[in-house]
Image 1 (cartoon, rainbow, N blue to C red):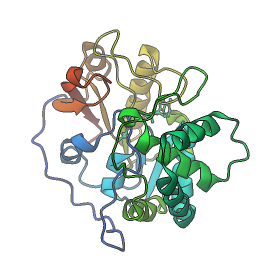
Image 2: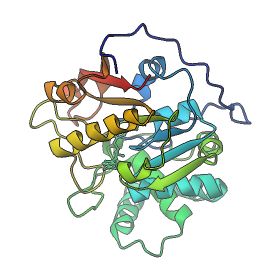
Image 3: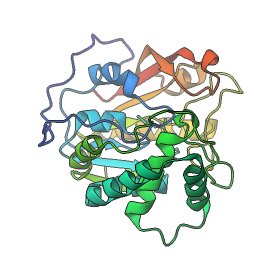
Image 4: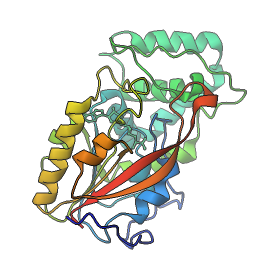
Length: 294
Ligand SMILES: C[S@@+](CC[C@H](N)C(=O)[O-])C[C@H]1O[C@@H](n2cnc3c(N)ncnc32)[C@H](O)[C@@H]1O
């Protein structure tokens, strides 16, 4: 691996099928740490060719939807998120129908009733019901900030929107055509990428290493992603490169992250983050895009 900086490429010429209806797919949920704003920087640093694409910290999966890869593994250990993507892939019409209902009856009392139902044991929820409830709560909650507490309960109050985009069938159909071509895995990133081979391309977007001790945001699911997890991920990335895989990773630009990826190519980029619930404290922060194996 070379640590020199490379001339940046234009987006690679790997051919991916355009969705049949010609609509470019975009994320279906707003996700903390979503990479929509960083897409051009990420695409400019991708390998020119690759076999299978892996995105193992999917979240809103902004890069996956942009690339619309022909062969892909999309994974996250958040079972509700993978359930949502599975429901869209297999039965988007049912998800749309249920969202139309949520849109028609949307009110403060409906929001809190759905939030309470969401937090009940959901063993008996049909997949499309739970998927639609997820999108509904995500689009109408305060700041679109999906956050769960230590026991895994979704606890965000309703947001103040005049016309939240609860049901956008075009977005869901475009997502369906991309998701249907992918293998969806609900798993830890190591298990999800175990079968990656030489020539495959893996993008990792883990929860950020906190820039300050209080800046940590690790509650997409109950559980944290601390320094030991960041270390293990770096070791995993090194092992993948050693077996001939091409790896790209984004994270905060901190001395700790830079020390973990010594020997990889590390580029600093600016990214507007929307983590802080206080709008005045959001703003541009430095991130790194780390690449290795190409
Ligand atoms: C920064 S977000 C990804 C954002 C995403 N790239 C986007 O565009 O929205 C990190 C994701 O990693 C998932 N995650 C955290 N720890 C994980 C682990 N050990 N294995 C797999 N996924 C994990 C979280 O559930 C969360 O969805």
